[in-house]
Image (cartoon, chains in turn red, orange):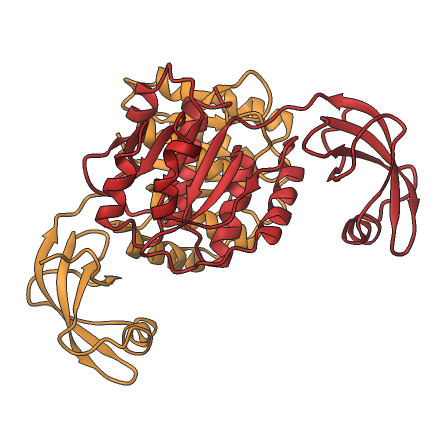
Length: 249
Length: 249
């Protein structure tokens, strides 16, 4: 049985054989009215903890649907411990970035408020919904998490208590940054978790960049000769790390 | 004088000291009404051939503006010879992809029609406008070109006449593809131009993938353990090549 094209669904409930799960009204609408699924139709289920399970719709009502969990398809596997610390940007581009970094395999996102960050509010519930959808479509078994926006000064002040043991890639447009492939290369035997930091539209202020590059474990990386948008820089840096040091290897 | 934040503008006309250029009605609207620029304001100009020039607005009318070209800022430099052969996808994602691959430094895009390609029309004029905007914002001196959609069978049939001397990276979700970083690594001393091929939503059909992998100079590359959207795959593959073999090194 090839389940490659079987619809995937993220649920909150625990997953185990025989479990009955009621799905949300939004999911009911999607399954019943958009996909026109019927009782007995197969689904692949995941909750970010218990792996991927085969399930089937057991009830389809107007406003509520339910499903029964059948058998384990894949044990739980999480994306590597990669944190993206990125300045929030305008909605369409931020949404797009969330979709891409979920597919590429980020574990956690910390929105970063800098001097030049224009967008200072992040609707984390909405972000979670976007990332659930991207996780469903990309065959992920976990969903990235997103923290509350953090001001750069408090992020740096708290660094030794919160992230002292992490490798840090600071994406920099100026200063003495090395090409990102060289940075990934020289960290070939590094086994630390990684935090990738990217700036806002307009880039970091000079003092911000110096402070970030002075963090323990920090390496400044350059992403080519052109100016990248904030979302492009985040996507590109994550891609390079994943391809050279992460779970693409 | 730091011109880093001086507005850039793509023009068709030849660029040389003293040249007077009339800009398009769309550009007039943008310069005069969106940016509220006035006579004497500085601009950075490029046309994809003559490098980047300093210029200034010499006339701002209701419907037409003109500018005078002053001095050369940077000689012409083109993105490396990288072709992206990618299946067209739905508009918002295709637009996004065009923006990203322009920033990342692609030279030419060939839309590819495969068995599972749903979107079969590409408005090349609209694509050109999108890429001009991305080139203006990313400090590029050239604008990527985009060809007419090509059916996969005729692309393959014409390969030896059109692209025989190119290295080919085929992004594959199945088969015996190597991780993309390994492919880039083993091509370390390869000096050929490169064509990167990515599939449609739903992937290549098996016979399509076999035919692509049998092209002269072809290497099948895998982009990690998750399923990537078509646009994500194109962006990620281009990023890896540029970071490891292209002009980011």
